[in-house]
Image (cartoon, rainbow, N blue to C red; front, side):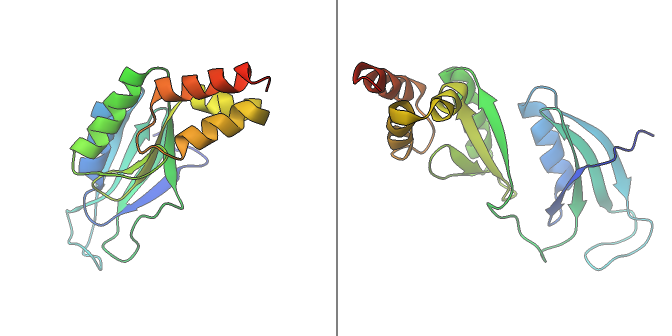
Length: 165
């Protein structure tokens, strides 16, 4: 068995397997790698219940732990998924929100298990990295959005470049 030196461990109340299967169906380079059942009863489950799920999300190895309701997810951790087009942005956003998730602001949304996702078009990341007026204009446009609108970010970049910045 291949055990990585470092793995992201995500705490789920009880549905780590369902979450892992959803991620595997939604994102490329994603899969369920293994499911382990509890060998004995534990505080939030019984022997034989799914305890941990090893999975990969967009190339990142993770373990989902069904630990009960003690530690809910928070925005302190999120996956950031880089997209190339509006269609790709829409596909991921709609998959997460349409599967019981919730929209947030500035390209953030939550899946039905409470895990936060940033669906971030590359044009926005590149504009922010450029700095100056381009970053300011792209940032101002982003601040008005829930799901990122690629055309609006591109228009903000054009405006910034046309103003000499």
